[in-house]
Amino acid sequence: MKSGAFDLNLSYDVPTQAAQMAGTIKWLLSSGAKAGSIKGSEYTTLIPITKENADSQTACWNLSDLKK
Image 1 (cartoon, rainbow, N blue to C red):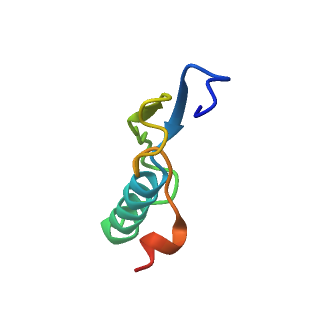
Image 2: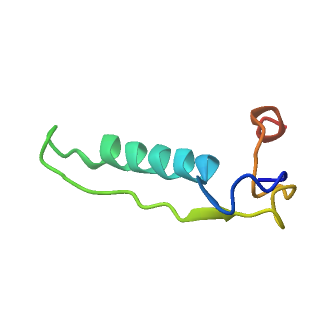
């Protein structure tokens, strides 16, 4: 992105996805629902990455930063 080789990249917000999945798992485990009786979907906003925002913290994340 920084070099201009690509105009646009769409990135997943992995930390938010993980938090959503953990919340759903907690809810399912505490709900008392039978396995396979509930269906659902999780949606996460994609992050557009361009040359202008390629250096921002939202464009790239680091696991060690999240552990702090």
